[in-house]
Length: 327
Image (cartoon, rainbow, N blue to C red; front, top):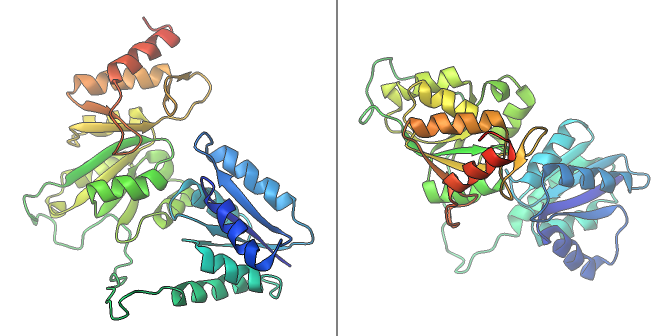
């Protein structure tokens, strides 16, 4: 038997399930798992497993997820990769949930439910006026390697890669980045710069899959990013750089990558770090890295999303030094 978990940001998943149950009534082995604003990836992952454990006589599960690249997508997809009998579809809407509830107890395999839901979701799209033309993006270019087939030494444009955003975010590519920051900066490539992630096949693949439509995602070591920044063949490239921590950003900048402003989105709390804001924690290594980054003339912009007002970074650093006894 197949079970269903609907998950997404806020109360979206709960509202979808309530709306569909107005048609079908209460369904067994169907759960809505929400991600509240004050919760993080670990909180959501725990709730997803609680939903899985609550199911009876279920051998396969399909996840219906709201946003490709968001925290619910990232956590659910990591669970799917650990179990070959699970499957996932992102971009969930009410017609998809209704179709899933109408067929999930007639299939033994979650992938069969997913195929049916995917077909119906495309057919449910309706435009008015009917003659409206919707152009589809060219999907022919599947090469996600950050390299160029153009002969070495060729200069494209002014020969300088354009960095539309450089951001420190422990979660790297997730909902806020894939939607609001991508729309406001319009990159054609999102580049995660990390030695650790570049050598982690699972995390690397998840980041590539989380890329928003029309934007290529890459994961490269710091040394490779430094080389790319000096390659004139990337002159017409608009790149968003994502770092896990300030130390990686510092090493990249010291290597010659020209970053004028560094956005600080989040640094997750861990042992030895002090809570400074709702989304930023720092340890002594982070403070020292930021001090050196500032000495290199880089401006620090503290914002989770583009519409927020930038927080005072000097006050955050002062608080960090006090909390960590670095004065």
